Image (cartoon, rainbow, N blue to C red):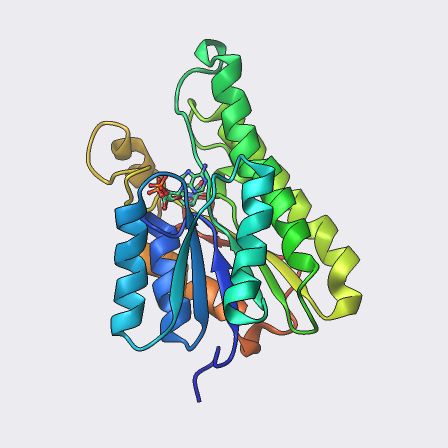
Length: 246
Ligand code: NDP
């Protein structure tokens, strides 16, 4: 029996990178999956097709995480399509790496709106539909706990906010049998943080394993937290970073 049989998951920012790997993995574990994306409809459709070829159900919904009405609507469309919602993965996120004093107000607002405001709004909308056994999962960051390099000041602050949001919310919804956890990736090879180039060198060197992580290594942890074996884990910040924060 698949671990997530008859479950429905919504993965924000599921068209590329870590989110796409999470969507595919949750589907492989038996879930029906809705993904959101901001711009790239073709990439989103490719993920939906890959899940379909593997014999599971998936839909893609255009919803910018910074747009509260859009993310609320994405939750409603997921429930309308699949009849329920068991797992929310707040994965959509962005970083605009540069020295803090050079960051514009617009750039800082964008990072806060996607990484924090969008997470609040999506989670609130999802909780309306979640029942006993529900799972809220954040994709925070290892830099939400320990800032290893300059250039990520607003980003690190938003991921620190995600960490405390997780812990505080776990206290509020625990009596409904819903768990809330935060997966904190280290450097993972994606469009957002490619493993090649100057920016990658210090990040790779900061890990104990001396390498970037793969998207599947984050998806595996998300799948565990989404599944039945994690039933007593809540309010936890689970770091998957190749030892970067060790
Ligand atoms: P990518 O940029 O590679 O992929 C981002 C995904 O999110 C795409 O599917 C993109 O879709 C979507 N997306 C981007 N902006 C929005 C938005 N405003 N609303 C909805 N969807 C959006 O990122 P990663 O996979 O690297 O990152 C995913 C998460 O993991 C983020 O929260 C990030 O902070 C976190 N993380 C990443 C690390 C890394 O090293 N890669 C390390 C630690 C944390 P579209 O193409 O349509 O815009």
